Length: 105
Image (tube, rainbow, N blue to C red; front, side, top):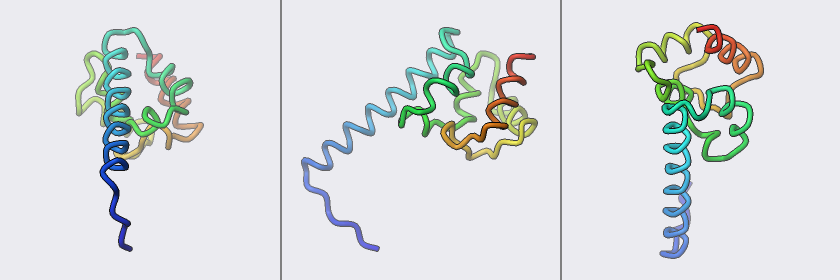
């Protein structure tokens, strides 16, 4: 399937939209790292936001203080979340299990 070529204006708008989405995801991760937000707040209230919904769960977990790549992978394996899952793609039970696991530790 061949995509139609974008005009310079369309390309510019797409670039601006992508930059805004990256900025929103970076802001959420920084707020989690500082303790201003919790993972539960992000999952419950911000998951409907298109940019935040596309944030990978592993990146969200790695933003927590003291959680690196291995610990994030372990948390996801314990809860049963695929490594490529995004926040928007979490099921009801996965959300609940992740929140409960993070609250207990």
